[in-house]
Length: 229
Length: 231
Image 1: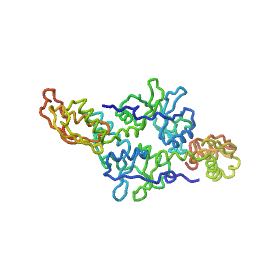
Image 2: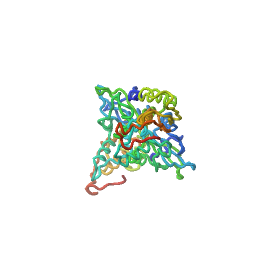
Image 3: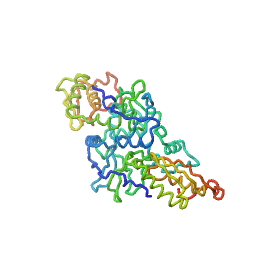
Image 4: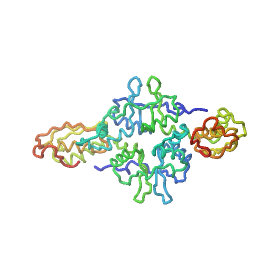
């Protein structure tokens, strides 16, 4: 069972703009292509920033406000500068939040969450764009068919980790929800099966109905993490 | 001057889900419809929450690492709960920030910014879902032709609001950059010409110079810091 990376789900046709692109061109681009952001590249084709809808929308917000307020905090003043910005270079957010090829989905998802962005340009080791991965792209992992997930649970979790117990465990997958029933030797085997199954790409939830013969938690000690995370 | 409102730009063909809609069905809907979020409604059509890609992605972020840490902030706990969610109701953000159809576009943009959201469900005065407005819908307001902008400036700003004589001030518009040139009687009129032109939908910037005969600011009561010239 392999981990999914951004390469598995990204869009490879990348649209980019030069730093000199005008506000109008940017609006046209985002609306026509239904993008929420576009990477800005320098003359060596390296990503130097990203212009998003949010950056462009500042202009509409401030159009109706008219006069700047008398006392203006630093953040609002920075935003008002963006409202009068006219080119990609002035509008873009930089440094850009990017993902290197080969970044696992989990890492990409967390990075988008932390940075509050909807897309990550995917770049090679020279910083040149090779694709774009959006939040929607990351969610594609949850469109995996149930039989693929079931196969992964069997070959990627039960066989390698439960070994002889694997035969006594019954797996069912419906709508991404995995139900495990059967009997295993030790509590720790059940725990591993549960936790590793949670990590199979596309799993929505795990219903663990496994029974065990021997509770080996006393031997291990309470609260000791067992095996891999 | 036409005030652009939410109902001028919103999508009325809006798809929604119920609280018990399964996680994967929500994913399929968002991907299939190429949208980034969907409102959750109850059986009367009232908006009870919104499920966005961000809400669904907590599951991908956690990727099975669903055990609580010793010291867990409220936010992390909420995210962990969402990561284990199985239905729209489990992962939705609620209450939803909604707007009325009559809200001005600029106010809607500010609201999105304040609340940190990228779309707003639109509800009628009873709270029933009637549409949805996204950031890109608001951006479309800016896709106006230079001819339309020039017409708005001469018709609405000059003629109707400021009563400027035809030929007094000239208007050029190129890609939304408006250049004004001319002369008005009062300084306050000249100032307002620039300010109001800036607010015309589609205007990216206002340049040029409008000169005046009489500085009426002292008579009217001058406001300090009134910008004059290039906006």
